[in-house]
Length: 392
Image 1 (cartoon, rainbow, N blue to C red):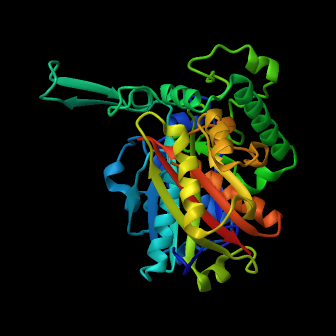
Image 2 (cartoon, rainbow, N blue to C red):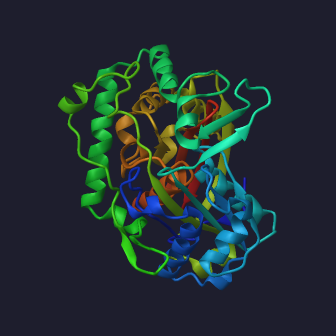
């Protein structure tokens, strides 16, 4: 897929993901801020905004002026671009990049800006006329109501994690060990300065131009121990507050271009990043944590690749249960996944989550001298998405 498209090395960046209500991002119009921040990030990466021709944005939570989608956000960046909005729950961040690859491969544009973002803090409450309801009017808190209720199954997402853990006989001990290791991976990567290459500190200004603070770390992330995790109460089978992710805010931006344009814009023109393959699956109701593993298995079957061919394996894992199931189904050691951190630890703003995962995965692959990069995750509706990229 998308064989003509490339991701120019280094033409990317992400904000840190501060937890719900723990940073000035809780106070902004996230669409407007994302546009402004993307302009700052691309400027830092020495990308002339005049090179951009099109924009694909992705978010999952309503924000003021969302109706105006990409044209409004690009104006906040300082350029006037056409474009559109994409939304697929937690798959949004990867899906947006893949769609940008398709736009370029079809010859429509030479340089597409892919910008994803979400703000879970202070998410809006909507009031809907509902003629089939006895109440006639229904209010919905967008984040919490959707996390807590799947309209197809009438079950919460945490229930899906518990059901799937029981299906595969996952133990709490295994889940706690995975969680503790994921935290160690994150803090090791942070200590080595790896995150500084992917993340960009961003100052937040109020309407008067005064600083409200700088978002310069994943606020809310604290080190955990096996003993601490072991003492936590199970909310459902194997799932505790420590072995699941948390709501957060953030943005991530990445460029997709032609081969020729990638050589012009890349911070290291000798590095090539190709799109190889992508697939999605939908599993049985309320078994979402197994869907990403099923998607990866299907993708490997389609491409003829094997897990041993992957230089980097990284995923969106709202529950540590996801990683345990992936390890079972793919017969892949969970220790060798998410070597530089993951959303289980640093949070889950939905829209930009898999975009940040991809950025970190590509940086890791470059460090290793190249190879295949596998990125995957789950999405609401018991969906799994997986994609392979090649760094050379």
